[in-house]
Structures are given as structure tokens and as C-alpha cells.
Length: 290
Image 1 (cartoon, rainbow, N blue to C red):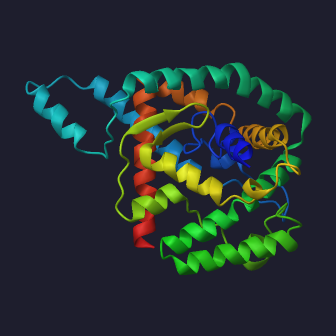
Image 2 (cartoon, one colour):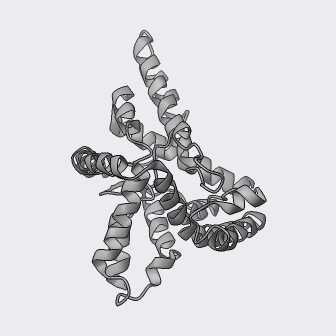
Image 3 (cartoon, rainbow, N blue to C red):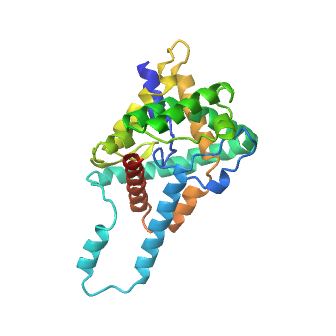
């Protein structure tokens, strides 16, 4: 059991190399290919919007003439958006570059081959099935956030999709009942009750995170059904294979997004960090208001 949890935590990327917590999804890529197929989650589009806005602001800043009182202007700019302590910056930058190379040398080539072999319709089906397995975590986190209607809707989605959607292969609840996914995770739950980020952390493979959200990742894994399958039924290698397939399948819808981000960012490390903080702040704020 411990080996399974460790394998899932190290390999699983409900966020990819640079976004477990930060995934880059272009909503235009997530068109439905049939009435029973679910499009990819919209929350990741917020990350891309945040990155685009951040990079645009950086580009505009370089074009403006430097004012006489530059120190005061800098202080004002720093106070505009949410901030996060980054005392581990030297180590984080090493991890950032490690994840960057892992994407270009391993994940992207593997995903390109996979996308060429597996038709998009089947990749959507796999995505739906993996997403359905995460529904129990969304139910529990919505309950913990006192979002009872969202928790009830997510429970209905899970049950309905598991049966009518044939194990979650299709999003039957959205098509037949009009019930959309109610996003929630444990890091968001902790933020809902006033627990701050702590410090910024770049995790190997999983990407941008914080001390709070790293604890959140572990909490979500404990709510994941496959975590509790006996090791005699699911070996370490099989668990790692499932997690790797989920990662590659998810990335197949987003090839090119990370490259575009890097090209438009003045400093990709800072842009990634700022976009992560802005995105997580938005999700925590939504948990407090809904």
C-alpha cells in the first residue's frame, strides 16, 4: 500500500510536468466529439489566461520609460497582486529546469507518438474515466468547504456517470442531467479556512506548488479510490503505468501550450510562480463565496 501511494504521488500529474496544480488547457482543444464524451476541465484555461495577462503586463512594462522614482513604483507594482514567499528559489529553479527538460526530452516526444497512435475520441474517453475516479475527492472537499449543493451535484455525477456513463467513460450526467463538474481539492479546502501558502515549492514532475498545496496533494491522494486497491491486485509497476498513461493522455490535448508560454515570458520561472499564486487565490476565493 505504501509503495502504491508513493508511486501515485511521484508520477501522477493531474497537472503535468509544470502544472499538477497548473495545467495548460486551451478550451478550443476540448471540443466534444460525441454526445457522451466530456470536455476537459475549464479551470486550467484560467491558468493560461493568468499567464497571458502576466506576460502581457511584463511586455508592456519593458516598453515604458523608467520613471524618476523607480523604487516607489516597484513597491507599488509588487503590492498589486498576490505574493508568495520563495526562500527556496535556488532549489526551486533547479527543479523548474529539471521539469522543463523532462517535458521536452521525455513527456512531449512520448505524447506526440501516443497522439499519433490513439484517436482523439479514445483519448477523451480515457480522460473521462480518470476524471470520474477523482469525483470522490471532489465530493468530500466540497463537503469540507460547506458547499453542500456542489457536493450533492458531484455525488450525483459520480453515481450517474459510473453506471449510465459505463464507468465514467462518458459524461452522461452533463448530457442527460445538465450537471457540470464541481471542482474542489484539499489545498483549496485548507485555503478556505485561512491557511496560507507557506512557501513556494517546485516539485519534481508535479511542478508549481506551495507547502499548503503539497499537503493538499497528499490529502487528495488519500481520497483517490485506486489508492486502496491491494498491492496483490495492483503492483507498483501497474500503478506507475496507470499514472503515466493519465499524464500522457492529458498532455496530448495541450501540446504547444507550454512552448508558447515560454516564448512569451520574460522570465518563465517568475511568470509560472505568479500565475500559480493568482490561480490558486481565485480558486480559494471561489470556495469562500459559493
